[in-house]
Amino acid sequence: MSDVLIADDSEFMRNLLREILEEDHNIVGEVENGVEAVETYKEANPDLVMMDIVMPIRDGIEATDEIKTSNPEANVIMCTSVGQEEKMKEAVKAGADGYITKPFQKPSVMEAIEDVVPS
Image (cartoon, rainbow, N blue to C red):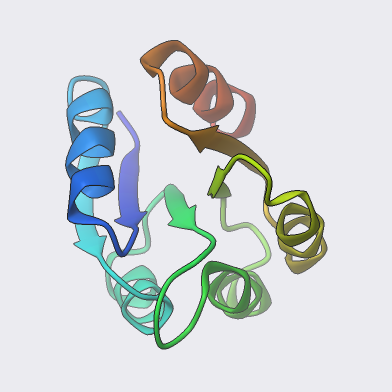
């Protein structure tokens, strides 16, 4: 069972991801901006971060870049809305290991995680 950090400024999306993940994964934290994501990553050292791209204070791309700089082995899956292809390209450059598109469906979320963190 892998440890997962959820970073999304939408409480609804955090709850949805938690419901999808909690059966098979240990949720070690839920944060709502990129600054909290980096801080909580350093404290909890999760196996995986589910990172929203668009968040206040520091967006998911900047947070991913910072996490990957401090730990190149970190696993980050970006959560993006349809139509954010340019931001997705930036996220991949920042080191994102995969992505899922909102609205989430459990099979696609689990498949993305399996691709990044094999069980």
